[in-house]
Amino acid sequence: MTTAYIGQPTSRVDGRAKVTGAAKYAAEYNVPNLTYGYVVSSAIAKGKITKIDASDALALPGVVHVFTHENAPRLAWPR
Image 1 (cartoon, rainbow, N blue to C red):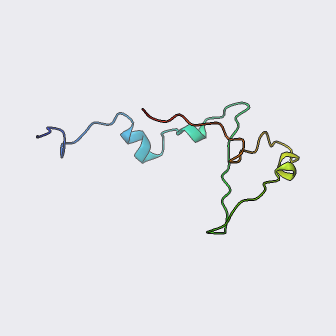
Image 2: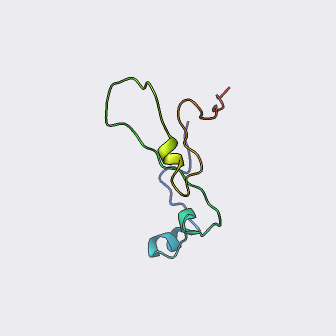
């Protein structure tokens, strides 16, 4: 099996804008009411979670939701 495109130059319409710094990336657009997440991981390599109390985090201004293993939505499994 051979492919004609491996090793061949590819024209990128956004290439010049990206290398010159003129391109805008998704994070640079101002979107009203945008919500973002932050992953917090444990410093303990091996252990057992017995309880998660998110009440202090939820009391902070701007916090919308705290996802844990107990309330995270199910992900679709590939078929």
